[in-house]
Image (cartoon, rainbow, N blue to C red; front, top):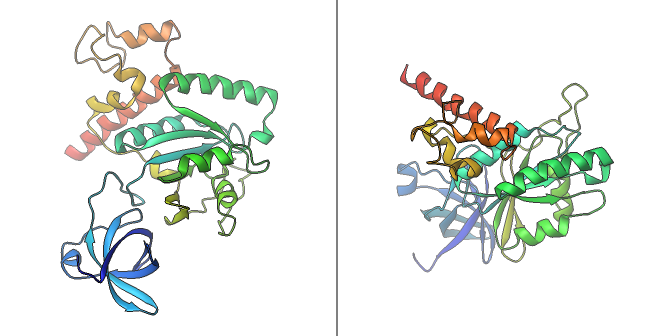
Length: 302
């Protein structure tokens, strides 16, 4: 690294350049030379080396890409610590399959997930009972639950405290209030907020690219489309069980060592379901993902 080169964080990817956060401020930087020849994929969240070519306005060239600790391929985002899945009991309705697909993805990509119940100011007594029921399921597995309301401000300080000094991503189904929560955390930033569709009871997608928003002193929060996590990564079907913590802990307890937990004789999962020690919806969604991986493998072979 030369004296005119500094390391910084990519905070936004545009068509022909990147915005990089440096200790001296933001710089617009292109890519050329060896990195361009290698067709290196640089994205938001990456740590890069930038060589200055102009001080006013500040412009540079990205000359090096640091090693990543993890990577979300689509839309591209690197070096994530935490992911917060924003969802609601209603407006839009709770979707446990979407939640489980999200959790599966975060386990595969090695991100730490948080489940956020938003719009708690709209909850009725029956809604709270439903939340308690779902919370019991996911807390038992080991996931952390947060309650928030952009309207009342409840839970926002907790979110900010968790995100400080980390790279976090906010995601969720459209209409769950993700962008509204972000607008409370970053009041000087204009986030596009969509309305709930009367037909689908879901919002219109408002996030089309990923920008890292600086949370001082040394944190960033990315606003990401929810489908980036629900479109799950492809893995061998026999390894799907590794990413459902409550099933992974039961490996070796079935009659057959190669049990896939899809109704085989002597499967301990069915016994635990009968005792209400496992969530039926979680097992159903595990089996859906397992079958999806089988189908993908067979389609690829053909």
